[in-house]
Image (tube, rainbow, N blue to C red; front, side):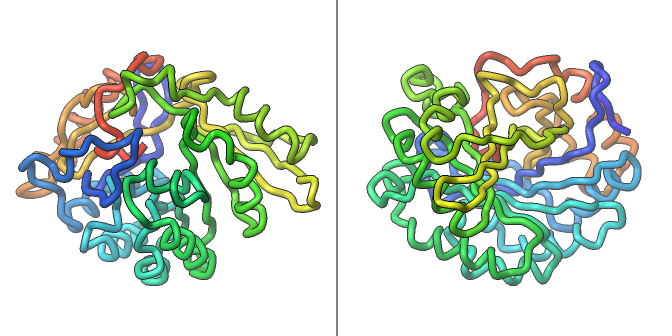
Length: 323
């Protein structure tokens, strides 16, 4: 098993396929960033070789494909199909903004995709457009419904909460999720990316989010967390429905001690921690041909620099790493 110097086992790979994304989310993406800056990116075949090695040699069992926006990769279906065929890979998921899911999700499900997380920061058209920089709420909602019909194992909603933007509609978002039988997770803003300098003004801690939701249901049953970044609760609502609500709390209650994640970008940069700097690059281990020993060496060097706790502020725009 891969492990860092703190003895944390690494068995979860978050693979960013591209920094490209049609959205301009307030908390995520600088206006000028839409490509890899001229760096080469891994092909579908190179991604398969790397992931196969990590699964079969080191016990990685879970892979999440992120971005930017992974559906902007024209070879996404091929990537999913290649990875879904790897013996030992038990969990294959993507995180997406949902804009093209009506077009893409059925094909991705047939290729072997198992789970999808869809970003939904607001149900109000004006707020959605202000937070994401695009007109697309109807498309995202349609994409959520398409994902529900695609036969996936799980569909979840993610919401980054910003004070003064969407923090007054958490109840509406929970009701939306409950009506569709979906889990929803609220995410604390981290001091990184475009809002890093304004973090204190926009940050909403879990405690405040919970207080905004007290009126929808009071019997919150906490679910086992394990390595999940979210603290999750089963909540019977006052309208009779039951919903699972999660809170991802990197700032108010970090989960560093149980972190099992490794992040690799499309151009091969390795991030042992979301908020840290890159600690090496593995592209030379997959191009011009795959070299498992070189990959192992570079990954272990990176993991040796995985800190016990995340830094106070992040260094890299979220669109590079996909959260």
